[in-house]
Length: 423
Image 1 (tube, one colour):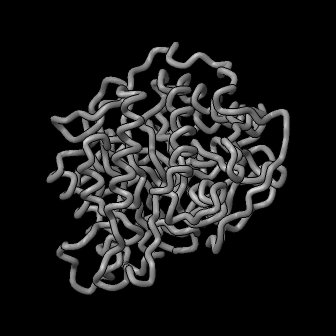
Image 2 (cartoon, helix red, strand yellow):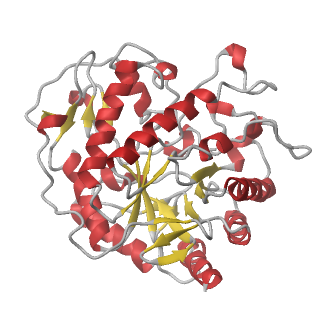
């Protein structure tokens, strides 16, 4: 249930506040020698798949994952900003910290979209200009080569990457609005507009083909929090849901396309896990998570044959629910996982650092994840000080090896608990 707040501080020399996008950004054309057509993109300088390592996969007998030959639940972390760093040594160090903390999966942004490269203040991978074919940035410091290095470093350190291919969360990194702006339409039309879908599929194909030989890829994530915003006639705060079939149909088409390019890796949607009615809403609970808000029907999306596992994002303080309700929500998704017969992970969850008992709250949710036998979880998010940048927000847990630190309790300790449970 992450809103724009979760990306409220992005990795820049100065931190940018994300705000709700009221309109489409105006595309502009710029020229630079670092921009090339997708068809002309140079090959990466790294050879993927040359190191020992197996592809992660679903173990159907247990509804868990096979990771490096071991069937297991996993503990992971969100470090979306890893592909937005400015220094390769930072990438190596962060992934090294992940490994020493006992984590096996990291979630990273595999997209970086702008309409105007001249005004870009952070890394970007793709320029979407009005009524033109997209261009890729191959700048060694701020373009696709940064993502190349993330995948290479993860492969060397035996870390698995959930790679998100686009972003639907409202804010300045909402890539769906950039696709829409390039074709003079709006975000809601993104999912059905032939021109936006042509551009999106071209980028998806490029990324999948570029890294499909790498065992570092855990899954291709179609979109972080795809959102089909409601009209006033489709008010999700009432008993009527948004039309959830739009995203379900879109996710079916995209996941089938990815599987046609790369049948060996898993595909996930990346949605927040909203449950569409009819559902037995607990008494006294806000009905919003159960009305199919933002056009999401978790069960229908999980039932898509080319989707391998489900995702849930949970921030009870933003949704107006109690912290205890978070345990109920985890249980409900575990039950859906059993009924559909596919793994489900708690892909994002967090509590603001200013909450005095947040460590205890997060520990409680982690214990419920283990008890309910979810296939994995990724805390939002890892905090690290990097060269010239500061990837922090109000939900981060800072890397800290001191005994008794939040990191040692919520990350290292949790990873150890997950290991003990599967032993």
